[in-house]
Image 1 (cartoon, rainbow, N blue to C red):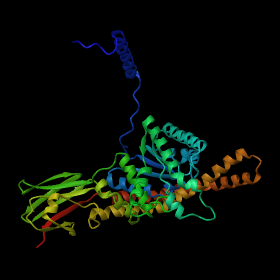
Image 2: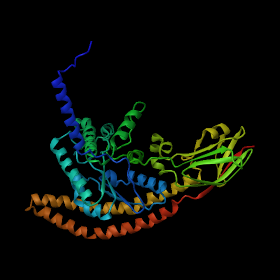
Image 3: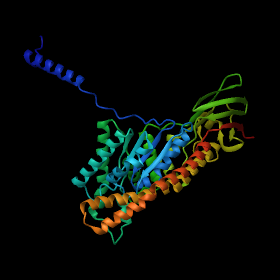
Length: 458
């Protein structure tokens, strides 16, 4: 028996027509923009880090710089820290021309929000101000030819804040219990804006928060943010890794596979460099290796963060795999330095060298990191501290507009204006000193040809 359509024929025809029209309209409508899969910094490009005191700390920014210096040594990429302690989005707007756009950046990362929430439970009016100012920052950056990268505020560690309560300035229970959620809300709004506008986005909040929650299952006092607001070096490395991962930059450094075959008895399959002068005997293999890059190495104070993240394996893998060896133990020697002893089984499965501080590549990368630390603790700090005067003056000037008859405030604005006379000189001095160190970095970070020997231990 023939089944009748569920709808009467006229209704079916109507639905078909309606769906056809809807489909046509959908095809005519513009496609929503896609969030970029990665950022693409090339030789000569500039990356600016815009933010508040967490950026002013010059830590996550420093570790991101370390990544670029070692991963892309053939590219001269310029970095500018534009963070000031205590900054809100409004403060960043006042200096976005001179402190950001004058550097002609290709990308500008924006880390603001910690201070914008004003350390209170969620307030719609406060949030509306943050929305307005952040939207204006993004618009100004785009008008100036820069590509913005939105980043969520970092977490507020309420437990750490409770342990560090100042009796003279106690934080309210409501603030302690709610402020981390306020920052999470701000971050999700930013993510929605990034999705709607096709803007790159970095989630700084979740990695810090999730790692803290996980660690407290075994250590209730664990924290990456001892003062509740400013992540310590390990936490700042978590932030740097979030940037590298979310911006599509994570990759291995190299992989070397020495296989049986060829005229010498061995052939090399490699990624991330090139081998030459490959020779082999029954119990020894040697070759020269020139890598394209160096492992991502950070100063000692950030190393606990590297272990927490398994950073080397995830973002800096240097693999070595050797097949066809006789049974036994073998030394791996690089440039006449024994960097480790491994069995033939371990070598055939593969070993990883990126975290081995004995390798010359690691030591070279650490030298780059220490030069960059010197740059950030010296001239970059000088530059950022100099900008504090501007922020104070801008805030007082805003107050004076609302209180034009306040003689004391007018005097403070005039005094601040005088102090600003030295800002350009300070900028020039700090940038010249930073460039000298940067020149040394770009000499130190060039990969060298290394001689490898895998030799049986007798």
